[in-house]
Length: 294
View 1 (cartoon, rainbow, N blue to C red):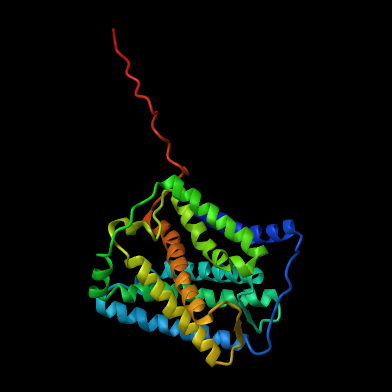
View 2 (cartoon, one colour):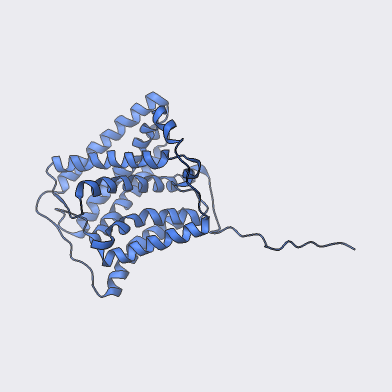
């Protein structure tokens, strides 16, 4: 787990700046707009935290499942991972400039994103658990059309190629490749999972189980949408430079939910007691050898 998370973080930090340096473009200047950022971000984080408590309590009364009651240490580590994820995404936005806030510097932008990420990641997983408590919804999502499962090594190679292309190319041509840049974190995490023989959030699709994909997307949309709405209602300044902003924001929040679920799966591995030492499993010798005794 630690190796995968370290490789993930290192790739997101190093590859964009390496691409900008090799292209000769240099580092972009931090862009900001006039308005407030700190207080609205604090209010948004507080509102999401209260919503987490209410949803978790509701889920516990209805189904008996609860992350806050039964997995408090896991939730604490999720907050740490969420803060790191928020800072990494804000760092990628430094190159993509998909949105601008009133943060006066890159460091302030990273701190604000870390603050929100610390509550958003647990919020997405708590919301997903709440949605999974509706039996009719969950049952219908597990009976969807099945998709063929690709081989592990080809899938890992393709995912890595797409992720690296997004991190390298998106930093130089953000207007053309912003969509691939924002897909790259999820693709990279999925590739690392495949390489380490762990399941991904897409693993159930070959059996027609779309519940994890759909519920995580809805959770990201609900949790992220609540944070964004609270931030703007509290007077927070934000400007989106994306094409078709409503659709792009909706898809981006759904993608954030998927990323949170995949990261949450990785963070849960110590609680499942799973260990992996090899990347690709050793293949058996292709020719059977038979030794006859005289």
